[in-house]
Length: 230
Image (tube, rainbow, N blue to C red):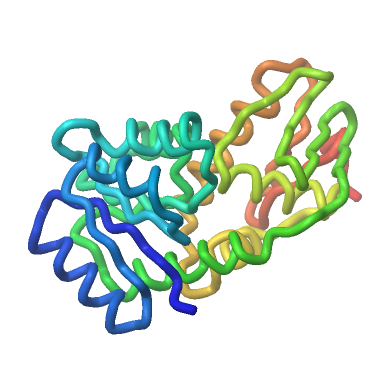
C-alpha cells in the first residue's frame, strides 16, 4: 500500500513539483494550499506524513502543527518547510510538534529521503518497556515523560531522541548513531540534531537541579546520573 502524504504549500509551482516528484516514487499525495484547507484534510483523512510550509495564508504552519498535535491529537510525522535558516524559528517549529525541517530551496531527493526515514520510524514504533534513569521516566507505550513526578511534554523527534539515549544509558551514543537512528542514513543532519538536543536539555534538565544529559565532546551524548567517565 502506498504511503499517504499531505503537501501543504501556497506556492503552486513548488507544490506541483513536490506532488509530482512524490507521486512518481509511489506515494499517494494530497494537496492543501493553506492552513485552513490543511486542517480540514487532517480532520477527515489519515496521512503517513505531512509536508508543511511555515509561512501560509490564513493560519501558518506553526498553528497547523499545534492544532494537529493538541486538538486533533495526531502524531503524524511533520516535515516543516521554511525559507528562514534561523535557529529560533526551527526551535519554535520543533516545540509545536514538527519532526524535521528543510530550508528552501527544497532539494527533492533529500526531502524524499527524510520523508522515508520519518515514515519508517513511525511505522516501527511499538510496545516498549518503561525506561528509567534516576528520577526520569519514559513510558514509550503511552509516550508519557515524567521527571521527579512532574509531567514533561515534548514533540515526537525529541521523544525518540530521549528514548534512544535512555535505552543506551549510561553509555555514550555517537552523533553518527543519533542521526542515523532518528533521521536515517540518507537524511543525517548534524545541525538539526544539535537544535533538538538543545530543546531536549531545556525540557529535561533546565527545570531541575541535577543534570542528566551530558555531552561527550567530539563523540556524542549520554544520559546518566553523573558525567564521570565509564
